[in-house]
Image (cartoon, rainbow, N blue to C red; front, top):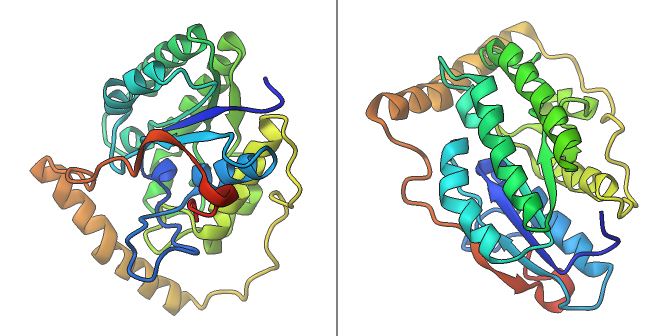
Length: 268
């Protein structure tokens, strides 16, 4: 690993695009989402000469791992980045019949190509879904894929964000209403862990849990779960049946490496 980076390119799906981190965005939402990768880039830039870091974010919501590799990896290789994050597979794991072993083979091929090109590579495990109704049915597949991620990192000399081990993420307050995407606080903590993983040193607490929340009344919990199924699970299933994705009309928010003007102020 390096002590500093000149070009950071982020690849992935909605997690890296930044859903649902709207903290400090323009009132009309024109800036899109922020997210852990944008936050990491801003922290990296603030630690070096203004404008020295070039940053691109090619992530698009809804992308499967194969799509990330086919659509985003070639661009990252052409950009000659010295740091590339590639986080994907979560959308695949949610789908019935997906194979975490096959996903791992795809991921390792991509990481191997990036490492051969000279880039440091940052991956991530999936968060533990043990406390999330319905989603917890994928826990076994997530665990298998996570073990592969650690093995890939060892073989390829890559680094890993340990989302599974972040106990703070077991708190429902870290998750948006859809229970799939992190809140701004969740994204902030992931970015801070990334600084530590990359050897750049976080100066904020990212691992401590939030203060205990008041217990939920069972009736309220049942009502919230029913609303979640109606508002989020139902539409997700509908898109799968129609062969559609939430990212069909979405483009990368930062497709080419650019400096973070004013020491990161344009990545809110």
